[in-house]
Structure formats: structure tokens, C-alpha cells
Image (cartoon, rainbow, N blue to C red; front, side, top):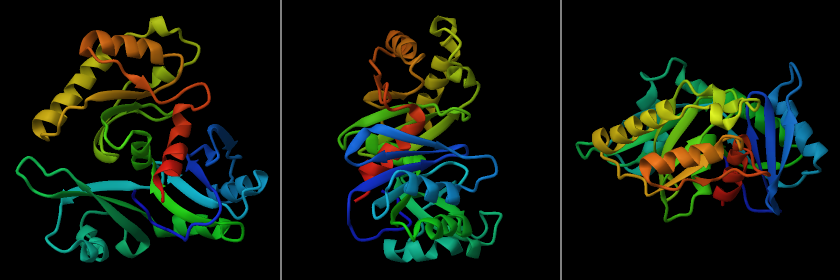
Length: 284
């Protein structure tokens, strides 16, 4: 699992997902119970995180944070020919011409990707502003230690079993629909599928949705991943979608792709809460 910080194991853990509008927390001993804390107007996320820890009496717990998309960026590139331990130190130098901020102000980490079409080793480099992460750490350090800071899309990979080669459709309110290829809990590829914000509309009946365009975009994305990137086709499909549209999407997928998609969300776990559970399950 992608990690920025790691501390020694202690008491039971708590996973928290930081989005632009709210924090979502899941305790290790109660994985189906989600605590939501909206951000008050003008409230800084670090202050909200500290308040959440105090409100839930999580002092002294091991905190695992999944960072929303407002915190990070990703760049993919050929893997430099150097030992892994040297590469981790060389990332700022490798990324100097690929980012629009001074590398001294950024924190970097990377994951290995499947080889490219030409057999070239590839990596995905994730980076975030150092001061934003330090602010989170300072806010909670009087209360508990941060065991892990990770990326939400990587945290989602931990929701699948280690042996599964899966495709995940994930829709968070306010964000575009994303499709992700995951194999052995490793992120391989993702694509944003635009134009489906209506999936969030709880007032619209499921039978009012027309899924032809969605299914066409899914087919195009799969064709690109398996054809251009030469990834293996997913063996299982998983949905992290609003409850009101999940059954209809499952039916549409089964009719076109002849595969039964399994829902990762349920009456207790909404799609937006799943990265909190993923970061909780993935850290060690």
C-alpha cells in the first residue's frame, strides 16, 4: 500500500477519508459503521480532523488517512534504471520538469505499473504539497499518531480480494464516474467517464436513466486498456455507486457484457465512505 507516514503498531486503528466537503471515519472493530463529519463553512480540514478525533474519542488510536483528489496528483513515466531504494530518493529530481511547483515543496511516492506495450517498466508517481500534509499531522499529533497517509484510488484496491482481477466503477457525489482496473490489490489503470453526474440524483427514478452511453464508454475504456495498454481483461466487475441506481446498472451490464457486477456499497457503506474502509484494510 502506498504510504507517506508509518508508525509502530499500537491500539486499534481508524480509517478516515478526507473529501472537500466532509470527513468519513470507520473503526477497525466496526467496519460497517461509518461516521460522517461535514466541514463547517471556512473550516480547515486539519481542524476538522482533530475535532473528529475528539468527538469520537479516538485519542491514542492508530489513524489511517485516505486523501481525496484535492490533495494529490499523479504522473506516469518510464521507470528509471536504478535500484528501488535509490529511486525513492531520486523522485524529486525525476519529476522536476513534470510539475509546476518547486519540488522542495512537494512530497513524492510511487507505485510500479504493468510493463508498457513495448515491455518498458513503468511507474505512477503521486505527489502532494508538503505543507498540507504536515498541517494534518500537526493537528492530530497531540491526540494520536498518523500511521498511514494514502491515496483514495489506491485505498479502493484493498476492497478486493488479493487474487481478484477486477474492474471497479466508483461514483462519489460531486466527482465524475471513474473506472479502475485492479489486479492483486494493485492499481493498474483508471479512466474518468464524464457526463454521468445524474447518477447522484436521488429524486430520479432508476428507470429514467438511459445506460447506452455509459455502456459504450465502458466498452471503449476496456478496449483501450486491453488493446493499447495490453492489460488483461477484468474477470470480475464491482460497483461503488449510489444505491438507487445500482440494480439498474447491474442489469444493464449483465445484458451487454454477460457478467454479473457485485456491489461494494450497501445500506451501511455509501460509495463516498469506501476509501476510509479501504485505507483501514490495506495498512499494516
